[in-house]
Image 1 (cartoon, rainbow, N blue to C red):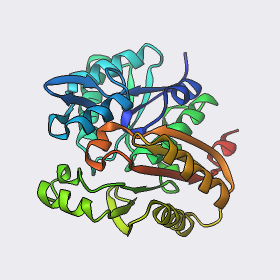
Image 2 (image 1 turned 180 degrees about the horizontal axis):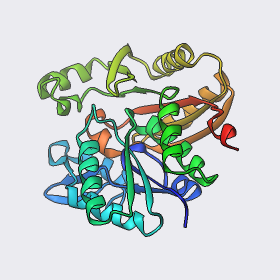
Image 3 (image 1 turned 45 degrees about the vertical axis):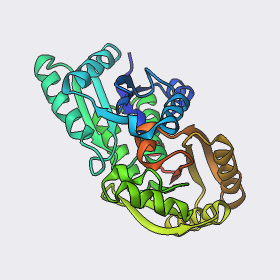
Image 4 (image 1 turned 180 degrees about the vertical axis):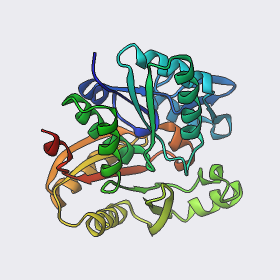
Length: 294
């Protein structure tokens, strides 16, 4: 039995292969709802199927949050592997799931006092959140205890960044920041917003482009500005556009010393507002946190 079991939600966009490699338990961030039917994200439906639903009829597609009892059930399943659990959650500034997880962890601990659960707000999403879960799992794999793993996440979070580009503004009305009509009109202008994750876990508009290749170069420039010339770990998440994910990965390899680079599918829970074609890049430098323990 491992000392610490690492969990995260499906917004982290960690593939099943990476989850197996690093022993990370992935739970749904929410339920996908289409035409009145509920599908737990990543369990009841694949990302590609969900995006097909979204493109088929956006107005019949939505997301429904988990209940505290859902989280308790997931914590109970994880507790069969370890008495110590770290859950790396989706940014609390973008969703209420982190707070729900905290409440569920407290309730479960009351029922099972020997089970210790720490819910860590990643203040991130997609590949940035995924990279934090992976370094947490690496820390757990070398025998770090619960508090040491939590400390690794908190320190790594300060060095981890995320940048994304939308391919269309058609779905942005779902965020409540723009009317449906305005979103459709702006989408006709072919504007591709570029947003970065802030230290507070929100998304901030930093640039825009009309052509994809121009937008890709702007993504590269933002990463260089934030991370410098350091060798970096990358996780590229795409919203049902694998060829775009591969193209962005090629550009990253041309511009950076890539310590690792994973291409994964962007969670439809985020994609239902960002829209198909969205690209998210999570990045962080190599950290000496694990070497210090060894």
